[in-house]
Length: 116
Image (cartoon, rainbow, N blue to C red; front, side, top):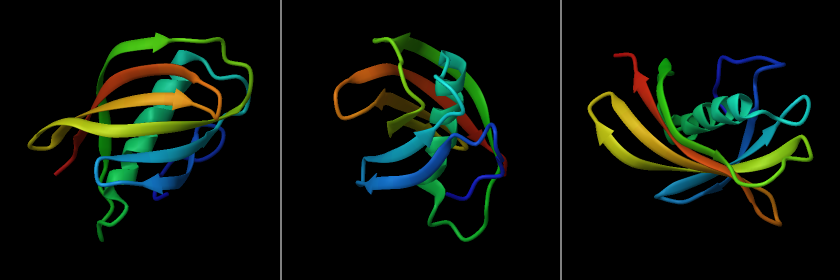
């Protein structure tokens, strides 16, 4: 993925699945993640929607809402399913779910603004 983040805060690692409505991104954490780390990983995962653009763009996390931990987290690797729910000019709202092969651990919404 084309991201400026470096370890230890680069959580989004690679795109695993691509659909016209969503992406699934592999995310790795240095230890069991907090909700803050999950929110950052989801923001980084939103960059999957821009991977085909020729010029990299800078995005800013504008807001978080309805962030919920649904189950206890017990490992360092998960997947994030991220989908666009709303777009208004340079601002896009996304919905995300953090999951593994067994269950969904967290969910929420975030807004990213792209610098023109």
